[in-house]
Image 1 (tube, rainbow, N blue to C red):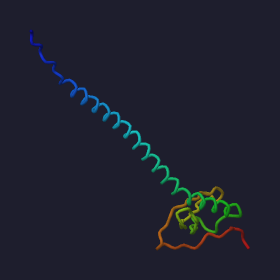
Image 2: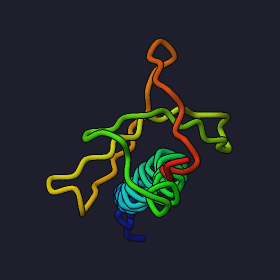
Image 3: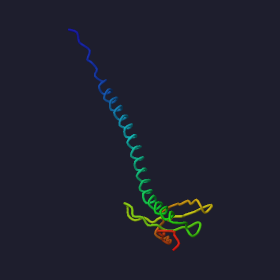
Image 4: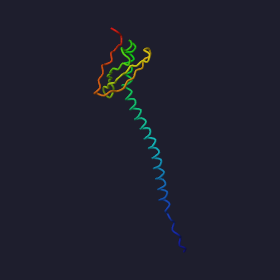
Length: 125
């Protein structure tokens, strides 16, 4: 009888390593997409939280500006707004280059800075 040559089964390990490499590459691509999406969502939420109080402060300023014009140019006051994260204080500044068109800016201020509160109207009493 002839002796048969033994079959070498070394390719199985190579195929398993190739599959593991392929799966890890695909997981890396999926993780990269997921990480980018999470970073984008965190940035959007942070911007939304920052804008929440600022938009309400600007709305309060515009409603006061509808009643009249500020007494000085520039005119800076403080507005406290209740937000989901708690009360926030904003410095609002009214500026006008010509006395007719007004620009309003709102920026958060710290606890150590204090200004007079914004009146509800600019009408002369």
